[in-house]
Length: 309
Ligand SMILES: Cc1cc2nc3c(=O)[nH]c(=O)nc-3n(C[C@H](O)[C@H](O)[C@H](O)COP(=O)(O)O)c2cc1C
Image (cartoon, rainbow, N blue to C red):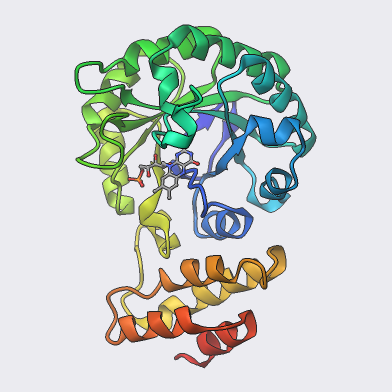
């Protein structure tokens, strides 16, 4: 059974941090559908230290979704330490540090993937977060900067030596962004290089694929991102039901969770986006997605989904 620092998970399948998607309602849904651990969207250490409203909003959480890893990003060890201290108030199960995001807005400030280029800064950040956190600290990173610089094994060793409790490896390089394929050989190499649990990530589309990757690489957990959108069944062996009528209860449950936890007026476009993702590959699904997109209020959207059978 997969565990991190003696915290045991019901499943080795993990919901990835997905900025703009992995909020409280979606995380709760994925836990209910079998994800063993869920990650928050990345949270800016500056936003947290300055207690910006938008950032604090992103920290909405509930006991039911635990185990939960809240992910921090930033490039300043002092700010990251302060942010970790503040996160203690929110009682996550883990604090994760983003050392793999390739988005320019993040890397141009030296955070995310850029930390793979500066291992000593990465170490200082990790030390500062560990020193201030009351819970185990984990790191999520990539294979390396580019194909000439596949540094994940030594990076993972640094994380272990500094005191990280687990590491997630997305098998792409910073240079790749989201193009090409994830290289799972690098996950195997990292697993050999360290004793802390390793979570492999990249391009997993089904439960069975995840289980095969564990067997092939020896990694402890599997993180799933894009394939979970509109598809929380990815955390179950049986996978997504074939018929529309069997999809609908999950969509209704997701809508209910969004209604409970979100401002349905302010984030209507976001809710339509999540909802539309359930309706792929059914007869008439493009028309249905258009109708979802055209809903002008949450009650209209809810009525539309409730009228389907
Ligand atoms: C829309 C989107 C948002 C993401 N946000 C984050 C994030 O906040 N933090 C992070 O570490 N990775 C983030 N990622 C990367 C994913 O966690 C994951 O590493 C990547 O999508 C590969 O896994 P997949 O093939 O299962 O999607 C994001 C990816 C996508 C597509």
